[in-house]
Length: 140
Image (cartoon, rainbow, N blue to C red; front, side):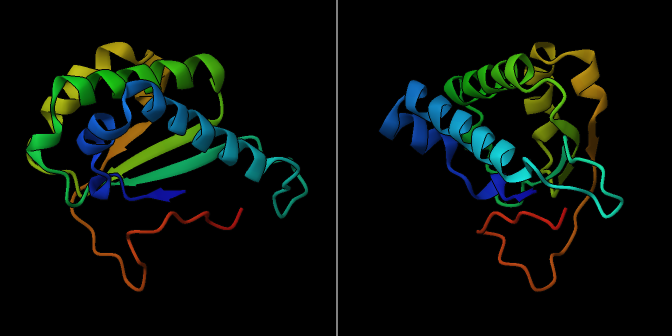
């Protein structure tokens, strides 16, 4: 899954819809992902039980680092770990701005060691031929 998180204005979503609705949308998103991989098989005929995520943070502004945004990110991470513990194989973060290590440092205490080990941080990349405003489900 490629997700353009840097284009998502979490602060505005929380202000407009509230924390509960924002968390509910994350829950629905995870359920859609689960439904998408259900009954899928690899080319070798093995059932698909996990997915990999590439999170593109291009466009993320430091203004997104409000307490409410950090709280919802940590809440979403805890919900994810409690309800989908082995669903994610790995997460690769790309195009992280200079201040992202500060965000990550605030959220990391809420993540398990196992989840933290699944995360990799990469530098700047350029997408060729992709519209970064869409969510892409890669071929499984």
